[in-house]
Length: 417
Image (cartoon, rainbow, N blue to C red; front, side, top):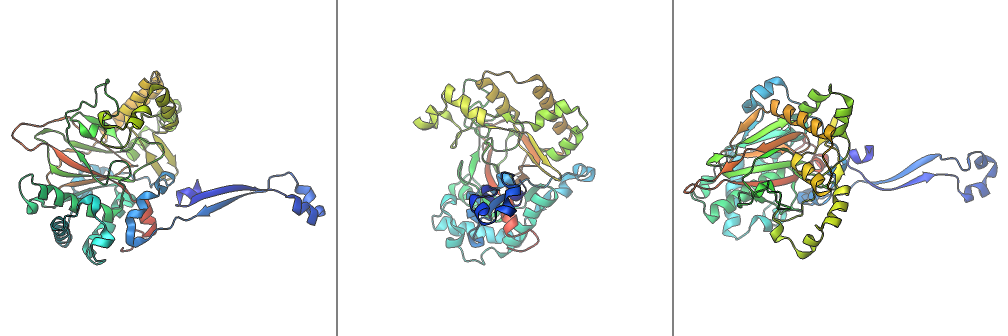
């Protein structure tokens, strides 16, 4: 655990015992310890990565074995979130982003095709790189939450034109991929968060994401797979909602400390492995799944997959912590397994939800051009239900998942890229 915590891959373990060759060579010395376990020898590997192509970090999931720092908020920060969490994008950074986005659009380069190393000279983003280090430091070592303001998407066109959306996404991707490494392995580099007229709360539907519906999404972190975690989640607002859709933020580290006095038998429910539902990669709509994926969701197979997909809500080791939670996926997993949600677990989640509600210090709509970035292991986020009004632009946010810890190990936040 200690080796993995600091970014090493564990290749193999071997118990250091007396071997036949040892006895043959020096029986008098080795006979007294023959058959007794002496040492545990571990072969470790430090994963390599070229800093010039930092996107390669996202393909190596060291984040799963690295617990992030536990980041708590002071009362002052919670009373004045606009001072604690808001950063304004510097003018020089914006000019670098606008120039790069227009160039990409003119050359026909989309976000999915963009290659930072091949498409731009190494000094193209000098100001952005310095700013990204500052943001990364805030995410991993200070507050765990950053709200970026100041991006003017109207420079690419005021209507919902193809150019405006494409250039906005390129600016957003460049920001995210300098803060960390955008992880596009599950749903692409960027994912459009907008209502596709699907009810995520409809129990008759399967594998439907809240990010493609207009339903309320209560307190959660992103990612439901036991085998993959995301260090940070970001949201760009292209069009805010006409009605509802406010984002809300609460600190899970503060919530954990606040609940530490509750009875152990309740706290243990949040510290033991809990089954979660299985979400397939892709658009989050079962009707678009491949035949193979639909077969893998047969009841008999899903029971096995859900049983495996169990992990704690909180993992805490001294000053480090990981929080992974969405109550809906826990309840839907139990339903598919034909299990009742245990009474103690239900009570513990009630207390957790109430504690996060009390600690909510940000509950407002994002404005056009805002970028909200959360440490996905320390910060819980949610969203109110919303409604698109005919004649007005529909709510459109864009999500990115990032691996940040390994980037910080390779280039610590106190050093420029």
